[in-house]
View 1 (cartoon, one colour):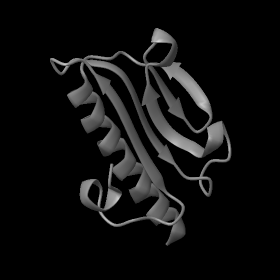
View 2 (view 1 turned 45 degrees about the vertical axis):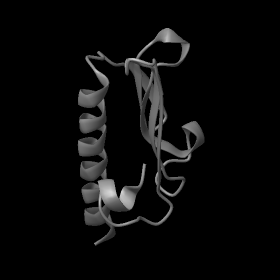
View 3 (view 1 turned 180 degrees about the horizontal axis):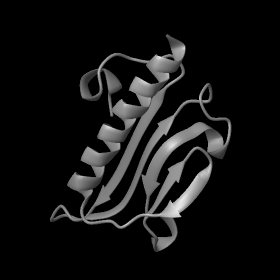
View 4 (view 1 turned 30 degrees about the vertical axis):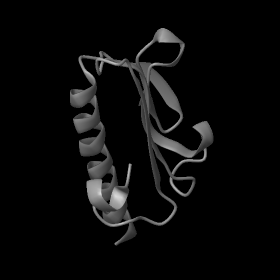
Length: 97
C-alpha cells in the first residue's frame, strides 16, 4: 500500500501495511491492515490502527487495545480503514498545529 497515492502525502514515522491472501477465485481468506507509527503509539509494535483475522478471528487494534470486529467484506473493511487513517492524520495535524 502506497500512502502517497492512497492517503495523500507521506508522514513522518508512518507506515501503512496491507497483506491479503486470496483464493484463485478472489475470495479473501486472510488479511492484515495496519497503520504503524512509533511516534504516535509505542504499544503493539507501534500499531496505531489495524485490522486482521489472525487465529481465525476478525479483530481491530487501536492504540494497544484489541477488540472484536464484525467483518462484512474486504472492500468495506479497506474503505473503513482508509477513512479512519485519514481522520487520525487530521487529528494528529491539529495536535501538531
